[in-house]
Image 1 (cartoon, protein in one colour):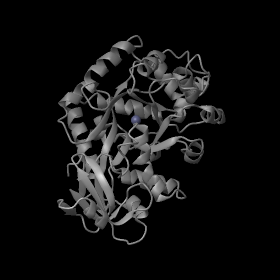
Image 2 (image 1 turned 180 degrees about the vertical axis):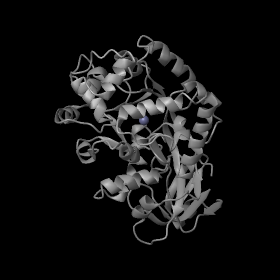
Image 3 (image 1 turned 90 degrees about the vertical axis):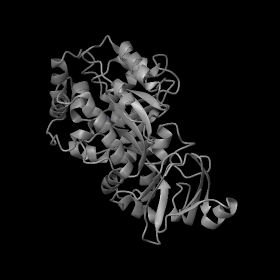
Length: 407
Ligand SMILES: [Zn+2]
């Protein structure tokens, strides 16, 4: 099958005008101008998308589809800890069937906005089998919290893996250093080769206050629910994280793990943190969620400094308990608003090429290249000029998509 359109954005150099993509089964087999591709693959079914641009399906590097039903339910709070209390109150009203419906609704919405792959954290891995098989490409991360039961880390991981193992792609998500024990982090790092790892880190000022100063609303809240606060008052969240996941036989800034870390947020950083992050080897991947960031009014995200240090920075929507939609186009625009000097092409990389690398799929997702998975989307393209600004400005539901070779 050949799909033709006004332009094809391959993410390998300039867009191809009057471009085409040849697809066989679930793979891309050729990309180029329509005349090149149709000469190479004659007698193929041709789908002509007309005045549209074909681009790689977008990849959401951090979301929680469990909470799609919480859209608009929690107003921005002055305190991050109050938001935690508010989401806990909302969650207490939900039953398993609500979460299943929420996840399905999330898939449908992400699809409408041109997303074809999600890194989705779920607090309920046992519900995955109740979600009907969709054509969506999903990395299921079991979100693990053991703050109320610090001796159950092994049990939590074993039970999560039992539900995850039947999935094609999965990983583990010890929630954050304030809710997950050292043992939980250590065990996740030993879960097996290829199990991806993700966590929330240095998200809020209150997390910084808790770890660095042993004070503040999050400190008081965590203490009130019985957390052992011995690890507070001795360094920032980043320093705490690196001391936990770093190998004791190596310097603390060497993360020793069979698996790579995908770290969400990283908003609150001190100069000492930057010194450590500069030395860190290997660098972890970073997910920034611009609209959730704005909702919480976090400190400015240090995109330039982190990028200059070599961090692979991706975009994610986070959950609809702190965002209005699952559109990565809207995230790209919100990011562009804060960082107008970054080119639209580089911004699109943060929703395609960069998250593909973070998921270790740099050889199969995020680009339109022979041998890659046929995950494609198309949006209208009016201008004959630069298509990248048009892509970032796109603000609607997409008209055509293909996931795994199926349109
Ligand atoms: Zn999150």
